[in-house]
Image (tube, rainbow, N blue to C red):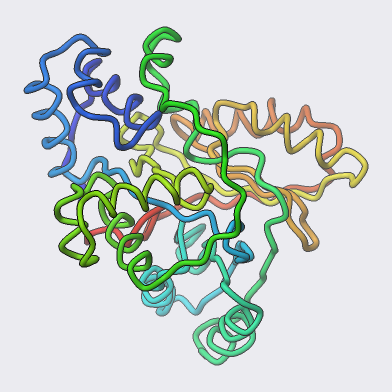
Length: 323
């Protein structure tokens, strides 16, 4: 459970710095935001202990041949919380939300194989009587991701440039995970800033092997680090999911335009009767109303739209959230 915390300018600088590079040394962050290393460390520990933020390691399943899906489930009123918790416990899910009146669930999943996809979509979920319906949309292309959401931005361009990770040419060589990688990635999904010594103990590798493997997975586009923080901590009290039906000939342009909206933390082109999905974060319901009626309504190619407010977040990018 997140404790009430008010973020001051130092906290906001720390948050933005960790969005840029989740494993940046606190010494480097402190120098950039103009505080001592001890102050940066205290602020990080305070926010981490309060449940306000954590850095998590996330896996880009596309580089491993996985397929990404976004799901909508309608449940009986007594079942939604339990079904959402069960979905959140799975290692292949993320962004698990209770929506609307608390009877609808939205989540994303990465299926490692056709068989795994079919087991979840055609067997496990439909077999649960408390799930009234399941709609699955394959994510074809994301145009906005939480890792670049503008709501976290605070630092100047010069400060951002000092924190950007050293660029490396992406290694497109096919990557296969071994059991040690699985242990490594599971640990990083709980805390992306876990030290090399602890990761070495968990994997049975040496510190240098852990670092070398993490660098390899990052250069290969498999591993990235995301800041896991509730938008409410930044003053965004109204979250919603949007499903839009967009004119096909203008779908890509509309998805790219939507991704430029500062309210949007996720947008993707999908299969299904609606072909564009988005996650939006607004200050309050009045701000959400303004966004829908002024910004989204100005997108001429959007033919229909369904909006569902987020009632509760069960899981975000990493391992299941503490209760």
